[in-house]
Amino acid sequence: MERHNGLVIALSNLITGFVVLLAAVVAGPWFQEEEKPKTKPSGTIEQPRNPGVGERTEFTGEVHDLPRGYAIWAFVRDVNGGQFYPKYSACGVQGDEWDCGSLRVGTEGTLDKESDLKAVLVSAEGVAQIMEYVIDVEYREVRNEGMKALPAGSTVLDSLRVTRVR
Image (cartoon, rainbow, N blue to C red; front, side, top):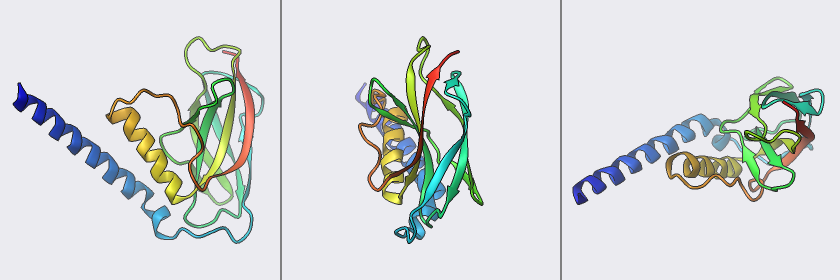
């Protein structure tokens, strides 16, 4: 029985190492040229256009003066619970537009519940914190209670309060 436990632990460590390596490769450009913003970045949420949303909603917007080495990340925050739930990957940025794809808002049975959708400017240090959270939830089976705060070095570009209506 002990040999099997060792194998499970080794396999778990191997998977965790692979996920961290993959995260480093994906986040590599952010880690190479991080710099403090010279001008204050700004951004707006373009989609969703109204506060009534379904379980999944598209999350897009505009950004101006995005500094090198930073990424835009989507967070959903339950207004009552206070925890921040990051999307597992950064938003795509092309020119002055960002696109986070589809976000899940709330959980089953959460109709009429309010959440804040946040477009957040995240530094490389913040990306590392998000990746640690993702690894804990997905691979170490830590209970998914959200992040207590936004990552270090983060700046909220824009926020929209929505209500899950379907």
